[in-house]
Amino acid sequence: METKRFGVDWTRKDTAKSVSLFFLHFIILFTIAAGVLLGNKLSYIVDYMRENGAYYLYALICVMLLVVITYLYFFFEDRSVLRSGSQICILFVVLDLYFLAAWLMGSKIHTYARPVAFVPLMVFVLINRKAAIFMNIIGSLFVFVTDTFTGSLAVLQFEYYSSLIMSFSAGMFAIFFCDKAKTRMRIVGVGVLIVVPIDLIILILEIAPMLESSVAITAEVFDAIFQSMGYGLIGGVSSTILFLAFLPVFEVVFNTLTVYRIRELTSSDASVLKKLKQEAPGTYNHSVMVAQLAEASAAAIGENVDFARAAALYHDVGKLHEPEHFTENQGEYNLHDEITPELSADLIRSHAKDGYTLIRSNHLPEFLADIAMQHHGTMPIRYFYAKALKLSDGELNIEDYSYLGPKPQTKLAAIIMIADASEAAVRAVKAKSAEETERAIRAVIEERMDLEQFAECDITMADLTKIRQALVNTLTGVYHHRIKYPSIKYKRTESGTKGENE
Ligand SMILES: [Fe+2]
Ligand SMILES: [Fe+2]
Image (cartoon, rainbow, N blue to C red; front, side, top):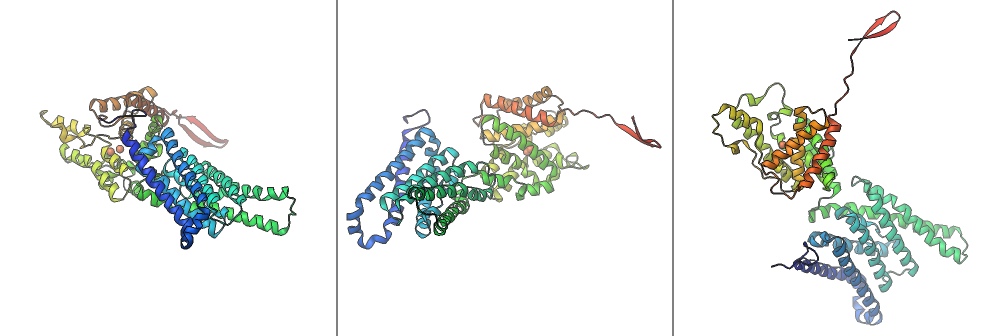
């Protein structure tokens, strides 16, 4: 039996897997650093190491210490990162890239031109803000340690300390500004914004020693300061250029869904949604309404709001296959008046599978396809089942009139199922008060519980209660009872316009 240590969720197997991944990545990081720092000294490496070996040993010990501290930080603060092999890889590959870019920019241009905000920006978007703040400290210290002990760049020690402060501050500002950047392109703005603190720090750090040693501030001194500030500008902008270049690669290689990708998929420019709006406007409007409900429900139970919105907008895209088969897109003519209820049920239920196929064939994220497939679970298609019951002697197989499933497999899929059905139910009963709305939503949830639709996902009773409250609040706001304005008939008379009640 697996022994569980450090809480119920953490096993020895998790420790072994995460420690070995950290060790492997430490070796890779070390090899890259050694290659970069010693590559051009290979012809006289023995003599060089005899003289400088001790410094490299200090650097190695410090980097090892930083890696151990990183492991311990995530062990005590956010074990989900250690449990995910791809997140550990993201942390280290981002560090590897930063080290290479910092060395390249530092040696070819200037220490201030290093892409100082690259690590925090990448970790913020690919993992989370807490991890980004911590990795900003580690990234800054990592480059500082290799700088100071190996002296790889022929610059003054002063610049090393300055660049440590600058890289840490720029990274922190990048994280805070990033919070407001809703799209990938706005990150370019973050790159420009972080130049302000970078250049301010450079200005202070360059002027301070001059004031102390009473150096006359001449035009050349100004030129030198402006040049340093120009390098700072390169540092800020290159951080975002690297970020924009590498983020899509990371999204594909590590199969990570970033909030930017999700926002792009949910914008009105997204091709499938554009098509839905044009070819099935009824379904599109319904999906927008479901998105509003799904967002409120997700926020109520701590699920990702952006993911909920995306799943809701795409849940019915399968209806694009034959939009006119669905009430919300029908005009006068109703095809279902002319065919058997069994055939109608067959046409209706296919939209779940069609949605799955359409989403996958457009190379959209798998979770959207899964939710499109699961959003009706194995529920009977009530309208046509009831119609068939009326026409038959009662000998009906309910499965012939039900969706094919699977039932919701995640909390998010359950949210979409409830939000979708609640929107339709509240609209159908024309609920005018919060009580009527609550009754309709309660019935939707209870019906699905009776039919065991939540048996395969980990949603709890507490979650269902919070979702119900969130839906009632949102729907009451949307379909609130409006004041009926009295109509007035206007008449033009010689003395002006006069009105009277109709
Ligand atoms: Fe649907
Ligand atoms: Fe729907």
